[in-house]
Amino acid sequence: MSDYKPSILVVDDEEDILEFVSYNLKKEDFQVFTASNGKDALKTANIEKPDLIILDIMMPEMDGVEVCKQIRQDERFNDTIVAFLTARDEDYIHTSSLDIGGDDFINKPIKPSVLISRIHALLRRSNKFKEQSAAPVHIKLGDLELDEETFIVKKLGEELELPRKEFQILALLMSKPGKVFSREVIFRKIWGADVIVGNRTIDVHIRKLREKIGDQYIKTVKGIGYKFDF
Image (cartoon, rainbow, N blue to C red):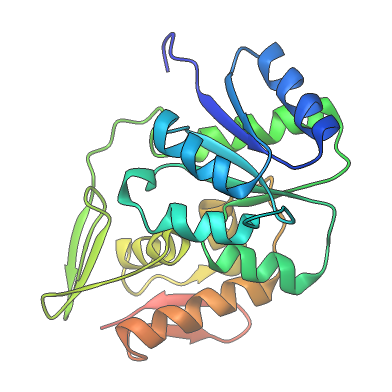
């Protein structure tokens, strides 16, 4: 990363949370931008192009889920990380938010040291800040074609719309056709060791992938995980 300071947009309608998170991020020498509602968050994101967005779910005018949806529809933000900040811990909140493109959850309240550790872990997983300089992968297997550089998947030449997590899971499985990836390995490689998600989350992503690419490609290995076959 050399001398580049990663930029972070913090979005929350609670002023004390906004100040707390911003203060601790600035202490770590991050560039920090703030917004107190969803509409202002989108405006700021469009201007500043942050590397990471910390996004409260429950907000006036436009909630965090809708903000994330709009961010994920814009290819300029393909490498932007979205971490939801929330006091809610219901499974359906976590699952639905990850489904629409969220990368992580940061639960309120959170200690400053834990917050900073999570942010650094998220940035390490970002395509923009990965230390390795491996060339982007282009894979063609059967009727499917995947290109990591353009973030595009095609089936029989027709482009498919895949959210970030679905694309990453498919890229992982296609990278070694026939190899069985356990749920634990998929979690670690896609979400990172610092994120805890349930089996239901990955099953939802696999189900949606099958709906888009066809049932024949991703095979379930009972009690273990998944593999790509063609």
